[in-house]
Length: 181
Image (cartoon, rainbow, N blue to C red):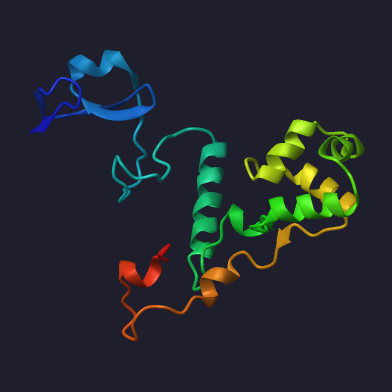
């Protein structure tokens, strides 16, 4: 006997219903609380918690799950996983000093630079204090007008260049943390 996932009653023939997006195996008394989900006739090894397509929806759901499974199987090769941040340009750590020095080198005030870039002077002040990061659009304006480069080269290179830890390959917190003595 199986317990109903809604009321807890014992039932010998549970029915699968969908309640607010969740699929539940319920007794015959609780089927009115949701819409009944038809089980596929083929024997499947997926469980109720798996993400495989177990609904008899349209072909769009089966095609999207097929494309999702093919993309996950192709990306599970030996190459390291990449994410959206790998493609983003990194900003140099001292962007605030670079902007301030370049602006002062041209003999401009913060409000003059803001007028030239068609931006607010408060934004320039925040960037030079390091309170805010410039958006991609503002960064390109600053780079073009001040003739500087604010992009860091190889953002992920810092991680690969690090060579700390013991020879056995196990690291402790002391190997990673930099002290501020």
